[in-house]
Amino acid sequence: MSVRGPGFGSEPDGRPWGTGRADRIIFLLIVHLMLAGCSGALHRQWVDAGANLPARCQLDSAPFWPQKAFQCGPAALAMALTWSGISADPDTLAPEVFTASRKGSLQSAMIGSARRHGRVAYPVSDPETLLAEVCAGHPVIVLQNLGLSWRPIWHYALVVGYDANEGIVILHSGVTAYKRVSIKVFEKTWARSDYWGLLVLPPARLPATAAEDAYICAVLGIEKAGQWQAAVEGYKNALTRWPDNLAAHMGLGNSYYGLGDIESAETALRAATLRFPTRGSTFNNLAHILWTQGRQQAALDAARRAVELGGPLANVYRETLEKIQAGVDGERPCR
Amino acid sequence: MSMLRQTVKPVSVIVIISMLFVVVPYQSCLAALIGTETVIETARGRQARQQVKQILDRQELQKALKAQGVSAQEAKARVDALSDAEAVRLVEKLDQLPAGGDGLGAVIGAALVVFIVLLITDILGYTDVFTFVKKRHVR
Image (cartoon, rainbow over all chains, first blue to last red; front, side, top):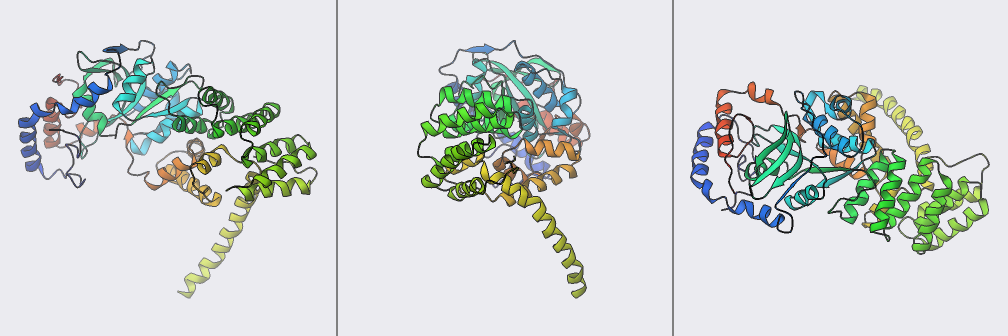
C-alpha cells in the first residue's frame, strides 16, 4: 500500500475536513493504525533517491538560529544566507519575509529576499534532489506542514543532513539544531507542501543538480531584484556550464548594462551576436548599447541587422531602428 | 443608473489619462532593450505578455500585499524581486498560499479534539507538532 496520493488529511476529492467530523477522523485513524505496517512503499523513493549517494551526510557549516514565535521563515533564511556568505540574522530579515497578518512568511517572500541579497534562489522539489544537494554540501530550506491539511501548521526548516542507515533527516528546525526526524515523518510533513524546497547559493556556485532552464530563471530573479553584480556572476557561471544558452548571454549583457558597465555590456552582447548570428534580439540589444555610447553609425548597422533577421520580436527591432534613425539628440534610452 | 454613469465617467477619464502617463513612457523605454525574461519567454514559444497587463498584475500584487499589512515600500521591493511569471502565479492565489510560521499558538488555541487528534497523529508519525512526542523510527 502506498500512502501517497490523496494525503491522510484530505478526502479524495480534496475537500478539507471540518472539525465537526471527529467521528470520521477517529474511524480513519483506526484504519490507518491497522494499516501502518503496510507503508513500506513510501520509503521506496527515498531509498531510490539515495541509491547513488553516501549512506550519511551532514553539513556542519550551516549556522543555527533558534526561531522566535512564528519567525521560522526569517530564521531558516538567515541560516541559509549566512551559510552562503551573507551576514544576516532573523531580526533584520523579518521585515523582508514576514507577513504579520498571516503570522508567517510566504514562499515568494523567501525567494525574493534571497534574491535581494544577491543569492540564487533555486527550487528543490523532490527527495532525490534534496539528498543530492545536501550531499554536495548545500543546505536546503524546506516548507513542511507539521499538522494536517485541515489544521495546517506551516513551518520552514533547514535540511543539513541525513542518515540512511538510521532512516533520519537532520534539520535545523524551530529551537532545535541538528534535529533528527525519521524519514517517515519528514516525508509526510514535506509532502503536504508538495515538496517545496529552496537552495540559497552564491551566484558563483552551481547547484549539484542544476537544470539549465531552472538555473537561468533563478539568475533572472536576481537580475529582476536589481542585484546586477550578482546577476553578472550568475550568468557567467551558467555560461561555463551551458555556453550555448541565449538567455544567459543576453542576461549577461543586460546585467552589465544595469550595472552601468557599458563596455562589458558591449563585449558580452558582441559575443552573443557572434554565437547567435541569426538571432535579432542580440543585435537589437547591441544596437541599444552602441546608441547609448553615442555611436550612431554602428548602432544603425546593428539595428538594421536585427530588422533583417526578424522573428517574433520584429516589431521591437523596428522600433529600435526607427529611434536610432530619428537620432534625437539628448534623448537617451532609459531603463 | 444615469447618476452612476455620471459619476463613473469622469473617474474613468482620469484613470485613462493617468494610465497613459504611467504606461506610455515606460513602454517607450523598454521598447529598445529586450529584457532577459522576454528572451526566455520567446524561446519557450510563448508570446511576450502585454506589458500593460504585467504592470497591472504587479500593482495588484503590491496592493494585495499591502492589504496583508506589508508596508508600501516593502511590498514594492518584494514584487520587484519576482519574475513576471511568478508575479502572475502569485496574484492569482495569494490568499491560499501557505505562510510558514510554525504557529504552535495555533494549536494552543485549538479545541481539545484537535489537540488529541494531532497528538495521536504525532504518535503515529503522520504529523510532527509536539516535540515531547517520541517519533517511531520506521525504516
